[in-house]
Each structure stands twice: as structure tokens, then as C-alpha cells.
Length: 345
Image 1 (cartoon, rainbow, N blue to C red):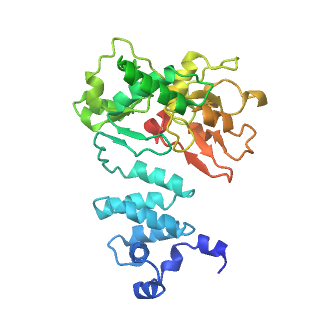
Image 2 (cartoon, rainbow, N blue to C red):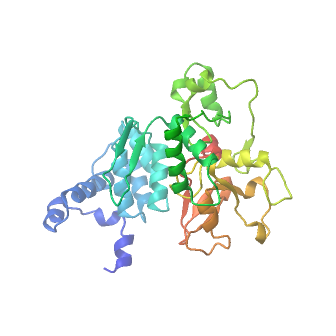
Image 3 (cartoon, helix red, strand yellow):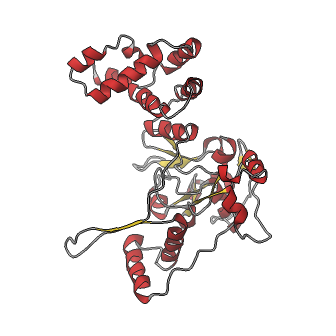
């Protein structure tokens, strides 16, 4: 077996799986347990024989590691019927491990226990120390908003923000609350649940990267005016044509609704600190229209491959869903879902 055969081996290699043989071959007990779980799912006894047959057929060509990943995550799902429903969706997935993980997170909602507030300091090293602060997201979003407002955006941000933070702590002026803008994305079904008194069950995403429940939304003092943006399930937002290179204010707002954080995978910048990016570069004829805009942090906006040939990949938006495209062609959806994903996926 060559390496290509090894990495492309799918579910069929587990048809005659034997735990004792696997242990004797020196596999770790954890790996043996994972493979046994996949084998039992696709070749073991079950009441859902038709679903098992359909899943086995769909799973051909899916790497064993992805099958193991699916079965591990399905342990959190109650009810065999529901597990088979989700499994049939996931085994039809074709793409990267990262893209599969994002799909799993959308289908399997696992409660996340918030970390307790903490402030930790490292030991000194070459005259420097590290501070790690964990606190309420709203307060830290206010802090980040203030620090970024006080630094030079053309220079690296990290050192500037550190100096600025120490200055704020020493002069004792405190941190003002950031102006919270009421741009709320919520599917119509969730809106109905808020209005019917089930607001605590709904989580809303805000353009500074924080979240709030429907109940918190109802309690917030927003005033009398809310902005409204219309979206089409396939085409995205209603297009606002613009003949200048720089997006106008309304286009920037709508771009942040589509892209609430930097579109590069796992980037920590929310849309409040990003730049509006032309998916098809202006210099190559890309227009400043809503179907050609995305949000990127200053670093990723600079390294994005405008000619689609660079080592950092590039941004694209098939079917109005913004993706990062890796140099090998793999498409990775945004870490933070935007309006299209929240409303229609």
C-alpha cells in the first residue's frame, strides 16, 4: 500500500475489523476504540438497517479520520434516530476536516460552559511578563474598541495596544462603554419565538463579535430606529451599485452583516476592526457592489491573493456564501456565520 492508498482508505477497510488484531498490531487503545465505534455503526447490528445501508453507501470515499470524527461528535446526540439523521447528512459531506468540523458544529449544538473570570500573570522573562485576562465579552469588546481607536492603524497593533492599555490603567480614567449599534441578524422563525416569550432560547450575533440572547435584546435600550437589510437566499443582499473604489457607509454596514468577522479561518478580528475587501480586486475590474465585498482584518487584507495564486489563499463567495479558498483549492466557510448562513442554512 502506498501513501495515496493509505490516506484515501475509506469505510470499506473496516468491514472485517477485529479489536484483538488491532491491539496486537500496536494501535493505541484510543484509536482501537474509535475504529470499533465506526465499524459497529456501519457493519454492526441495528434497528435502522435502511439508514445504515444508505449511510454506508454515502460514506464510500470519505477518509476514516473524518468518519471517526463524526462518530465522536455524535456521542453527544440523544436518540438513535436523531443520530442517524445527522450522520446521513454528515457522510454526504466532501471537503476538508476543518469544513466538516464547522458543519458538525452547526448540526450538533453542544452547550459550552463559559470560562470563569480570571486574571493570570506569568513569571518574568528578559524583563517582560504576560497577562491573560478572561472576563465578560461585552466589557472586553469595549476595551478593544477603545484601544484600537487610540492607536495608529498603519502600524502593528499589538505593541501599541499594550502601551495604550498600561497608560489607561495608570491614569485611572476608566474605559467608556462602546456605542452599541442595533444591527441584529435573526431568522424569521427565531423572531417569532422572541415575540412569543421564548427569547432566552435564541442567540443573536452582533457585529462586534459578541452575542446576546433574545431576552437581552428585548431589554436593551435601542431607541426608536432600527436599520433593516434585505437578503435573498441565493443572491445575498439587495445590491447597491457603486462606481467608486471605496464602499459607501451603507455598503460597509451590509458587508459586516454578511461577514461579521474577518473571513480568514480562525482570525480573531470582529467586523468592528476589519477593512472592506474587494473579492475580485478593483485593479482587475472588480466592482464595489455587495456581491464583491467581504470583511478582512488589515493583515489578511494585505496578504490575500488578489490574483488567486498566492500562498495565503483568497476569498470567494459562491452562492453568496463567503469562503476562504486555500492554495490547494479547499473551500473553508467562515468561522463566524454571517447573515446568509444564519437566515438560510
